[in-house]
Length: 232
Image (cartoon, rainbow, N blue to C red; front, top):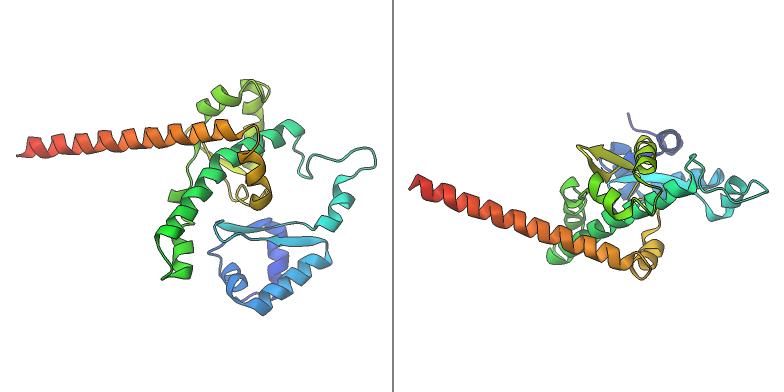
């Protein structure tokens, strides 16, 4: 069933996010009049569409003009409207930096490497799950445990982030959830993180991950050569 702009807006608000391969989302991305109607519907209730060409989902967020009505309770500015305390927000920023920043670098590199011949195809190829890589929980605890309240506190916060669709936990590895790529404005956050206090640590993490990947590839090649030699 093809949804009207009103029905789609209601579905998006109710679900908070939808995958890009949803039929109505595909229409949203290619049908300008449909998108304008959806954006007008969202704006009427103080919301806006979150969409990034390299993100696997679309979502909704507050308009700047309506943030104060939601976050300002008269005494202080709330850390979030989803029940996350400040230390959980700090953990979320760290995970965004460790997962999304390296992913975006790979995506941009892949798009440039593919050239100009297939504008939409390049973007589609750069959105797949293989582009995103997770962070082992033990690495997170070792590098950031003391800064974020210790192992117990982090293990308490990770399920919260998982339930909200911000991360996914797979065999002790923290992977991005549907909302992680959209929860922060990349253009605003990336320079602040890269040029800020976390920049050196993140670059170190990326270098270590790249070295580990290279070593794994080298070991796999050596193993394959040994197998081939044994078959001769």
